[in-house]
Image (cartoon, rainbow, N blue to C red; front, side, top):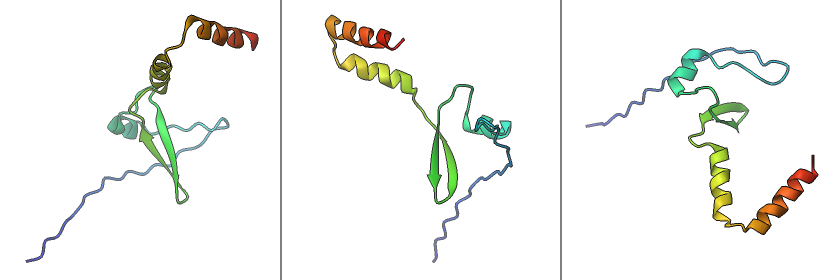
Length: 89
């Protein structure tokens, strides 16, 4: 007896135009199916001459905030950070 595995892959294709600023519109049906809501972060992967998009399940800003909290900076450290920040303005 042979066991045959069959995988069903859903694929939709669309042609979109890239604007002057590098922006493109992902068709609504694809955005809805993949859960790409406004302000969703998307990872762009280049693979063998093709670009793949993958939804990022975390907010990079939240990750940065959590990382900074773990540094356990003193008030003196924060004051130095603020001085450096304000010096660039």
